Length: 249
Image (cartoon, rainbow, N blue to C red; front, side, top):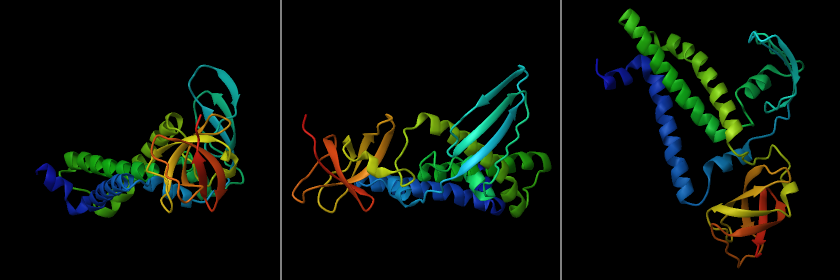
């Protein structure tokens, strides 16, 4: 069986569609960037804030005989007790199961579009890999329903660990999950597009904690045009968009 024949097997159709949707999203993102609008930023602005508080008890068995209490940011407000000794127990008291799952999948810590891409790629990769292993052993592909369910396990693990890594190395992308109006008075730089009347651009700005945010902006005056690379002053926040003026040092 050739590689292409394996890829388009009926039993692998869901993984084929997963990769195809990823490629379509990537193409749409490229087109949106060329047009001066970030599709991922637009989607992040539409995602609601779940505002979750969770208590997590985690026991890690690493055989070093150390007990430690850690307060960690896991995308929700969390108290984490770590017993460095090996088993992982997570207790999310008072948190709805679906909210706990979203937190575990790094929802809110990584831009929504990035999470979608990681999910699609992880699921497609996991499915094809598992199917290949099964065919090596049994010489026939697994049933479509069974393999599609089995692939969820490694896919979710990949999403969790890749998302956690990206959350540490990526700048925080702005969304409605935080209070945007606190950025009024800050100075940022246009990184995507040209800000003009009815044509928002994207600005990179730091908050008072030195965290980087990406927000959409329009010029404060209709006759004003501010191009990529120029500094701007965030003057007003209204209807989920900032109005800015040129900032001349």
